[in-house]
Amino acid sequence: MRFELPKLAWEANALEPAISSRTIEFHHGKHHQAYVNNLNSLIEGTDFENMGLEDIIRKSEGAIFNNAAQVWNHTFYFNCFTPGGNGLPSEDLLDAIHKNWDSFDRFKKEFSAAAVSVFGSGWAWLVKDKEGNLSIVKESNAGTPVVKGLEPLLVFDVWEHAYYLDYQNRRADYVEALWNIVDWEAVSSRY
Ligand code: MN
Image (cartoon, rainbow, N blue to C red; front, side, top):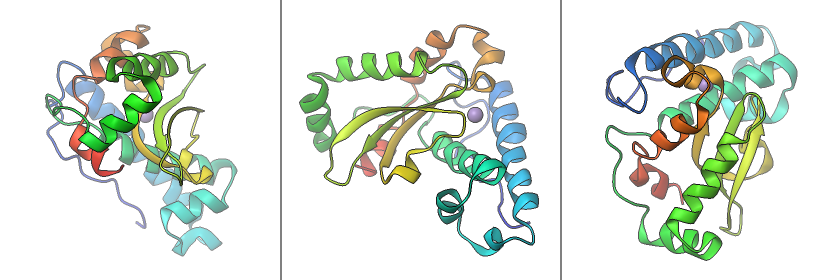
């Protein structure tokens, strides 16, 4: 086995009530695991076999890109949250957020609106460009800012598998609940 499913930093029930243990068990244990397994079998015997994950994402397309990007995106997603959340963005990141969106609340509102309005399956990202400018980016399916030279700071997964067991069609409620578990220390460390 070339790539392995990364272990979670917390127990499956630790993000409740925002995300149930049942959702984590499916999302990490089944969906994330399936992307890892698919990727491993797709790259076997190809030029991608000995490449790092980010190189594979940058150089592949089709099924290999989809599974590699989903492995990367999910690893990143699960590293954005911590039980009960923690505090606020660092002073530097908060200054940058205020510069772009006037207030932290306004930023959260715009990020939530982006996440809720992704059509079909996808992701909402907070990213930093090479000059350090922040922006909110929507991606469909396995889309990832990694291939655009942007550095992700935060992501919300809005594929239905991320919330359907807990929220059914209420994506906006899931998105709202995620703000309670954001690991701002981790997010800030990426800025
Ligand atoms: Mn997902």
